[in-house]
Amino acid sequence: MPPAVRIENLTKHYFLESVAVRALRGVTLTVNHGEFVAIMGPSGSGKSTLLNLLGCLDRPTSGRYILGDDDVSRMNDDRLSEIRSRYLGFIFQSYNLLPQYTVVENIEIPLLYQGCRINEKTRSRCIQLADLVGLADRLEHRPMQLSGGQQQRVAIARALVNDPHVILADEPTGNLDSKTSDEIMQMLIRLNAAGKTIIMVTHENDIAAWAKRVIRMRDGVIEADEPNAQPRTAQEVSSAFVSTLNSLMSASMR
Ligand SMILES: Nc1ncnc2c1ncn2[C@@H]1O[C@H](COP(=O)(O)OP(=O)(O)O)[C@@H](O)[C@H]1O
Ligand SMILES: [Mg+2]
Image (tube, rainbow, N blue to C red; front, side):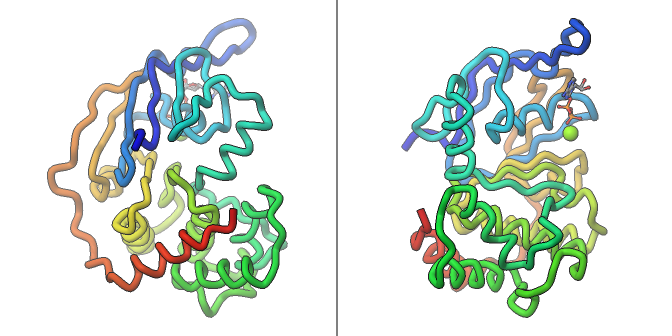
């Protein structure tokens, strides 16, 4: 099996009034399936730029990006958005839910982007995903009626709906108190235990401490890349959770 993602000598320059900002200055990185990676580094070090490139939300200035079997570095916009909606799940600091839609409808959104028709089967899978993240009794709520932690759970279920190869999270607990942050991290740990590959940006040591591998960036390059010898201990992941998630994933809606 190829790695989940492989980038080679990736650079990204932004041009501001003909002055180049060299946000990434040659990043090479391989992430294998099943890894849980935290990307750390001071503000401005290029973390979000890297995550955006990994998420096919932007294009590199130079270098190569291979996502699974596909070289995405030179794909056109249509192919890129197809790859994005098929293979990637996103979790953002500010949840990015659509306020006018219910919990279940928000979870369905990536399916709509993929041109998938919503029917009883897809609806029932989204309800099961909501259940899996602990929102079975909130299906008809709208984002405004949910706590921050609950909104992030919706975003997690939404990130799962396409059975993504990789889940990308940018400061997923940045707006949450520490107890709720821990709950969200426990949820990510469970997904990882069930086989999901996770790449997460955070500037908090407490949050990176959950990951199995920690990458540190500085000035647009990787400064350190080390396994986390002692990740924070998570609650035991029940085999029921793993098998429910895997059966939901294999009943893929593609
Ligand atoms: N759209 C943009 N246009 C110009 N410069 C940008 C843009 N986005 C980021 N930068 C610059 O690139 C560098 C890296 O930014 P970013 O990836 O957001 O860092 P981090 O997420 O680590 O804080 C910073 O110097 C930032 O000012
Ligand atoms: Mg950032």
